[in-house]
Image 1 (cartoon, rainbow, N blue to C red):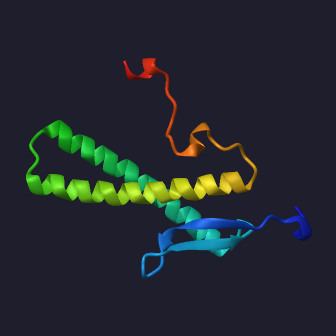
Image 2: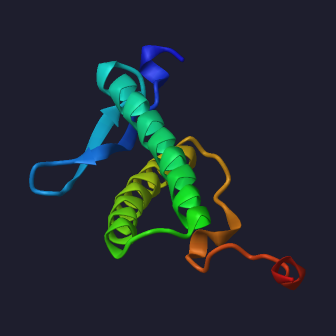
Amino acid sequence: MSDATARVLVRLLPWTSADGKPCFLVGDGSGYIARIADQMEAEQLSSAAELIDEACQVFDARTWTPGELHLLAVELTASLADVRRVAESRGGRLAALGHDVPDDADGNGPRLPTEAFG
């Protein structure tokens, strides 16, 4: 793309401001801040995968304490918030690039056939 036809995108960043407000990057999707955001998103997704494995181990062992369950719930909640932000950011960028909007864009969630639930 030439400079004259470069797309300007608004990207939700994977962090918030000091007062908890969302941060955005306006640009063409390249550059230093975009690379930092990409790296942070990758780390957040990797951390979520590790936390899921840890949760499975805790539940499989069936020897947890209430404190361990509380800590796990806190960590899973924080990780889920990070993963949701990554999904919202990536979904927004896909829509801005003209990709099809998913069928559940109306907010009703995925539409699975009844057979999917056994």
